Length: 433
Picture 1 (spheres, helix red, strand yellow):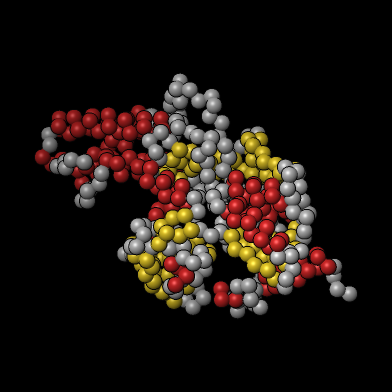
Picture 2 (tube, rainbow, N blue to C red):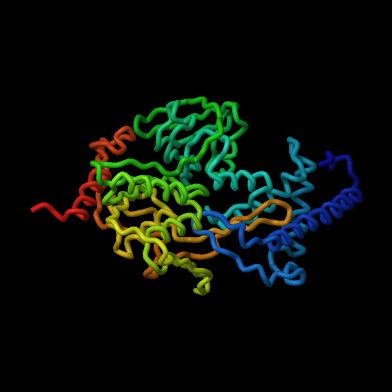
């Protein structure tokens, strides 16, 4: 933007400047209106319960702006604000940043923590999240909505983060020299943590376990997001942990099950504790692999209309006992898997009530390479249950002891893991008399 010194301008000159900025603001707002309605893709949706948007009827005529937000008074106010920024704001700011701020502000006004506007660069990064491979440190995070701090949920096996002092439950409070703010978007913060392979990022962490701050410097590497790990317990129980549902998860899960069956698995524990969710098509494929023929999940819009439904085929199903381990951080796609296995009565759920995210986000690519993520529907379980804000209740409720630490995961103090083994043995062999 050009420097403006209003004290040197005449009233006439200021009026001309206002007219110029009014026209520019009108162009910017028209771009918002057009982009928000154009470029929708039936294959572009992402997130834990993303729905397909029917764009087959979208014509150029139907894409004309018909909203009520962008009126003449709004354009005039935006123009005045831009003039003030031009005149008085001390630091430089680009027109592109201001435009992106307008677009992002429109979505932020929804007051929906899951809605977001992505610039073209951010959209590319978001797609990397779902690909199963990226340049970063190998930590899965969720965001504390009160403080804005990312919370480490799990550490990817073989990633750079395994070699430094960062643990699940740590809060990331600073990235390099940037102090995280409550209003920060999680995708933006993840982009800051990621970067070019071979470069360093320094994180300041707050650890609730010891009430201390820890600083770590990590060299970014190409990380294959190994979202599935597995092993045998007592030569008969297969254990499979799923940390997230991304592009490679379905294939990794099926490979793990086949390998465990080759080793003599007679029952399976599926651990989705601390799993924040992921892609709908991936969890649907896993459910189809495990379930008999029937409904997996369906979605309704705000009018109660069924937008889409997903069913299991009769081609494959798992015929051995299953236990699903859950906790309060098991969310979204994890809850679809948990609810469907529970409601078909082929699995016993052990642990804690799940998070309760039963709303659908659709990511809609826009014509200029950017994208917008909106909450577009709710999803419902096979029996028609709405779990949003409620979660999925365990069949066997058990919490971790007060002295549990992350070092005790899958150990003697991991009461949920130990109870899961006990329950699966009862399912396989019956209760001991």
